[in-house]
Length: 212
Image (cartoon, rainbow, N blue to C red; front, side):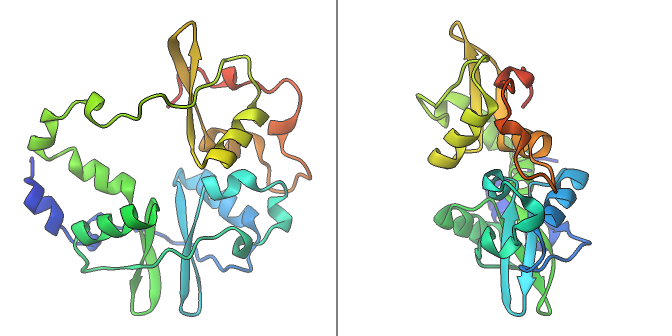
């Protein structure tokens, strides 16, 4: 059933919560979060230590060379928190203001999950009035692109330097696919390796044609 924007704005976090069964501490190795994100297909995981809460994302792991020897505390972001009864309008504003994709959800001083942009966007797809908007109304003009023959290591460096997570792959003026931080982290960064496979010679962005 389609919703109105007003109805969407007042939905409580509890209705869009992604529950998190595992607990993560800033002192844990990044490899623990890497394994969880790969196994669950999630992009973010909440981290807590006492009253401090934060988020680690797939993109957080993009710059990690040795996950087993890198503590979560060196890459997590303390981004604030959401309560179960908070309306989505308020949470969306916090995310936009702080340029974050997700917030930890707290109940009785305990992390029970996250509220993410992905879940909010899924709910937005049910709002009939938004169907009037075209992709051209919100697209980013002149995005950074790469060619299929360029290396994964270069894609990784661009993402880290520019603070982005997706790069379109273009050949002869046509989009051939997309390489993402998730592709690189899950395929080229291993929990116990001293170097990332993405830096090895021969790893090309064309490995991921057509994937989104």
